Length: 297
Image (cartoon, rainbow, N blue to C red; front, side):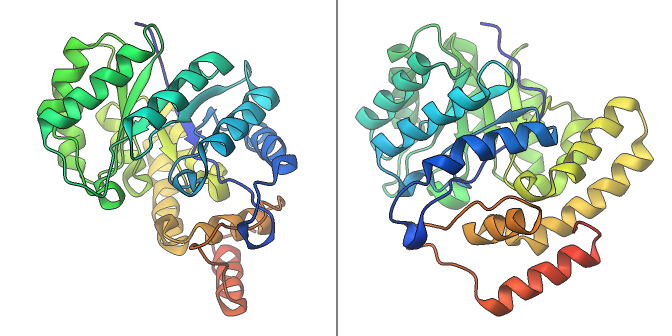
């Protein structure tokens, strides 16, 4: 099955109304258009950065519909459809297939501990439920508790036609190397750790799903485009800035920091949903100072 995810794919935030009560649907499509106009090569709605696991299934479906309506056909859309249970995950993945997304990304289920046999059965059932539709594994053990082993990923890649790639946010470059070196031809190993984006592109990943690109899209785009041009010196210079921005933006551990960064760069992305919290006045001032010092604003 042919599927390609090149370049910088923004793991877009989800705008909420005050106190996180509702999704601010008026801003969802506008944000998708804003990021695409800024130059990103794709969108990954309702993922970790998008507070997807704090949203109801209906909200996630409606957000995806807004994104598809706003930019579908003009950019790659990978819908995050992972949930903590199989039935909801299948429902969300079928909806992504039906509404016009290009692929689904399915995070490893968490809370309980699952072995490779359990996870293999889980992903096979999801893939079977959406035959002909590209499915990407999503490995983020720092959040999901459970990790996808390299052996399991390769086994699924070799034996399940529509499991076409993985978003690897393990933060483990050695694991990424093993995936790139051993996955079957055509299997898309997508990097999800922005602090070594340059290294991952040089290692052979075709694309990156990035939360940081909500705020510093131009920096990450520079890493990618300069590598494509063969100017590794300029690309590395941009990566040094990107790594610093990862620290300034606290690796997205606070969803509000991305939204404040977006506001400072010209787009009001609304509020977060509890138990996420808004930034304090002091935190907002510090972020503005750090972004200004880096020449971002």
